[in-house]
Image (cartoon, rainbow, N blue to C red; front, side):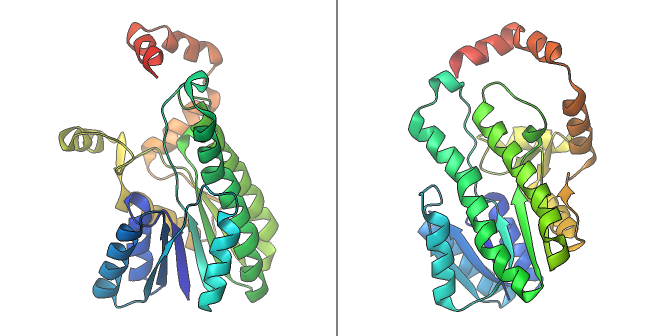
Length: 262
């Protein structure tokens, strides 16, 4: 059986590929970075002795999901695990965000994952077994200025995943939504020293730790995964945080300067 990972050429996606290969799954690595796809597949084959196939796909394209599904069908393989991990983090206020950038983030976080669930979940349900992991974010729990587009698309994934968990629960398909806080991946342009500090104080988690917790939750049939104590506390605080507190934070001079730049 195969596991398909979107955004599998780097960061958490690459870690998902490693962990699933270690569990004996053959791997489909999907991203728009062909050289990186090839590198990861070669490492998986050498390191774990599994089959690993690279698939180039621009997941922001309008028909990306349909084309990816057709390509998998043409390979004649069965996907037992679908990890919808591909994403992009964009810091900018809505008024300064171009329409093409909005199209890209909505397609990547909403349109393509939804279609992939529709296409692959039906095959899984017919076989009576399958797993889908949607990578959302802690930002799905409350609106955040400067990442309004990112947070709202992640909130969509949070809602989608939990609704699908109910829909497919009786058909042998598990749909789990992962909502991590900051993860130490190339998504954040930080120095190694700053990364170490953030990991030590618990603000940032390693990709390996997040991925292992996510897969553990998924294979146990859970609807969602909030990895780590700090993430759970952050989600609880965000859920009850009053609007007036966010307005006060936005008035802090340092925060105002950041808002003026993005």
